Length: 235
Image (cartoon, rainbow, N blue to C red; front, side):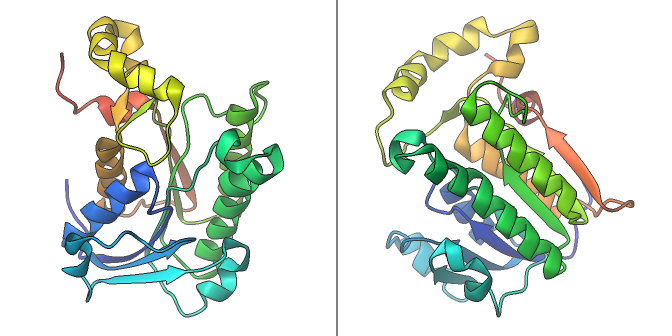
């Protein structure tokens, strides 16, 4: 695939499952010339991060003051890997703020600051008319982001994410343990529901960043789980 000459990037959600993989991959990717990370808490002190101190700029700030925190930032590509759970957020309103309010604010910043691409992790089943709260919020966020008019909006909808999380999620832990068996069973039409590793989602998002710009703008592309898993080893 042809590549661009390079881009500056902004990443929100770098302490999450997909976001941390994106952080590590973008730092090592020569197509990403500079990387600004917007985080609500300090990043972990890892030797691999220190090795990229000239490329990496971290802004720790209250996301409710996102515009102020990003006042001096410019980015060609904006990555959004923000997300939480009801258990962690403690209320539906707080969940909506993290999974809808902050991503939309980031999209508005991207539009106002002339970013070329916004690439966001959503979820399989996202639908603003869904009776399931989680799926409905994800769908509402997608609809609002689509209306902002960023030149390119890329929405990535993975299935169950595999990877090591900071918090314990019993349901996901069971699914992870069963994932080898699930992959064997999920063939044909069920391939779309195969669990996917967070690092593969990050790699897919990164490929979208360095792909040539679309000819028509604004455009909205939605990638379902099978697009992410298409290049994974078959079992």
